[in-house]
Image 1 (cartoon, rainbow, N blue to C red):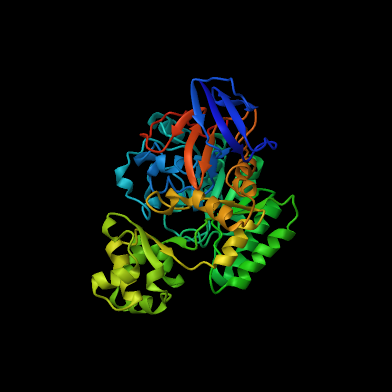
Image 2 (image 1 turned 135 degrees about the horizontal axis):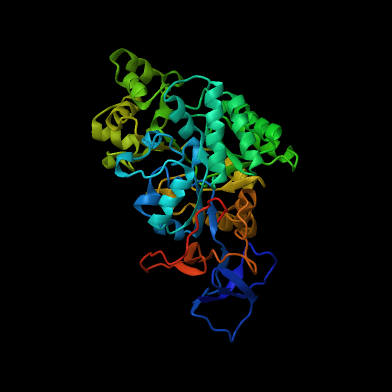
Length: 493
């Protein structure tokens, strides 16, 4: 198979190819870049003077948490924004390894009963995905909480020496079969009490495998600096590569977030500590994050009992933060789809309730705490400062139904329109930079010998996306598995 893409401006190239180039692809690799007026190919695509960039790498995919990779394996909504590779297993939760074959840990996001699980280990998980023929390259972290909950259930305690030994063995096995590292969800109810020594032990395993640790910080808001120091200490003491997940500067704690962003400029280059962020002025959190801290303990059922309890519920509602009901919106609600997309303000009218707290409680009870909400609470200036920081990458961190459909094109569009960064630098943050950190060889750049995972966009719209040298997406055409997606298994992609 040969492919010729004509008349494009290359971004993310290994060198400057000028304003007008043609890109010739043979098989799954880029063969030549230049001007080829006489060259022919099996498929010729006109770039119409648009930008050609490396296929984007989504460092914050939740397509596994919401089971999108099974329900919509073609991943057209991702290809439509130029994404060719996703990294799942975020925030401490992955679909493998499963010691007992259960997915209870992700039921806060989706209906796990819809899926027939035919794997336990990471190796078996990748084999299952291969049979299902995904439409996009896929890599995953091993979720710390996925394994920890399998070991101790809902117990909030330190692990025994035997449990730590089992944990280390499981992580080493997953890394050997293609996991890109370990993710930690230290703000989640089951992760809050995890001691640093446990995190460090697992990070040492990741460092030996030259992998990456992704850390959903233990605290947000005015305690962000303290939480960031823990991630920094992890990078410094283990020499592991650390990503601070979905860094979200909140209104009301501006000085604390400014301190963190400033500190990043002073960290030595050899300390591999990075941020990932979304390009929207909203947080996405499980609805139980809205509960007061004292009520965020144990399983969903235990937390729900506090919300329902006649005596405790009054205390819960008193301690719930009072937010603008128009800026809190239900993003996903498992088995309660009619709530999705509605703000708390709208639900107050629907339920006939008069306060934010009692309406939020009603949603919590209705959904059994199996819901995700967006909070419009981020500082726009600091969010831009986050994007500009040279240690920041950008990802979706959202389910298919909402903003993840346009996240990266929204980011590039704002960068270009508002001239916040050069477009070259912005593309680096969603392609070459993550490829370098994760060690995705042959991806993330445009050059001869690199894999032909490419996207062409113009005026904020993707014209077509190439995966493995094949046309994978073009507007108006039925999505199909035209490319040859790869899974990041034992030998990489």
